[in-house]
Length: 396
Image (cartoon, rainbow, N blue to C red):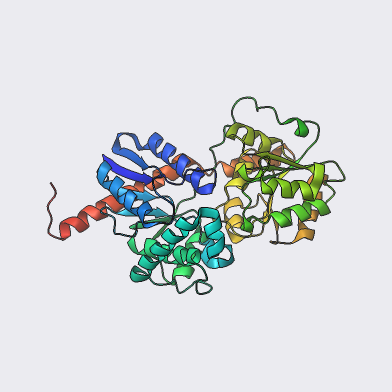
């Protein structure tokens, strides 16, 4: 039996939180008696040396033989066991404007967190180099932490798992070298789609609607989404734009922004459960996802899994994951987005196209991903044992 510790410190409603939750559930389903899975919950502030130190302590406490980090942040001190690291994207090296300036970081996380980040960066400067493929030298502690930590992860991980070939190429470009990556797409079959769908909120029961799902992040292209919607025929036809996600709850700034921009045609639902989310996708006229950068794209694939049409930014990674089943719009192009919305509303797709979208999304299964991760665990463990014995040690 192989004992593995999975870092469970990111367990929120974002993509990495979704990945961690679904991965651990799938590993427990398919691992059987050959796997003992432990998780390390959040116990220290993010971006601090204590975050990694607590992981190392958890490895020793659980007597784990392998550490899996579902994000790029590895312990600053060498871990006592081999590590497998999942890198979801390299957004902040390719587009560093999305890193937090020091003042913004302090406002978001607090002054003590900024001090902890500074200490971590000072330690990283001793053990790492700045990635040669980065688009610029770092202009904030957060940017420097991100770049140097990615370098450290590539140096120390026995394997790096990435969701797409696009991310593998981006990582090699950023680090200026070939990395030992394993391309293993996550699943998209986590929504509860069996049984009768739960009823939609009252404002959505009498008319079709367009849908945005996710957070209010700078790279998500929400201003393009809103302008394209307002320039389309949708508002004139009484078709609202629905926002689902924790940032669009009552009283949140993103909800206020949406309402100010679109008035009664903006419907902000806030965070919703998986059953309602599946129903929202299944009954929407289409999903709008106009991000400037993605590493995988959970939400378009979730939508396809229900048969929902998707309009997305024309990004290489989304061409890779969605194949022929997306309507692709140049990033930031409001006019083409409006035209795509009008075409979608003017020519609703039939049952055959719906079934094709569902069949495409069915290729992305969590159990398949978990089995690939289990093979990585076994390979890394075997290599670690051979390396240990080659240094003159004997097994107990």
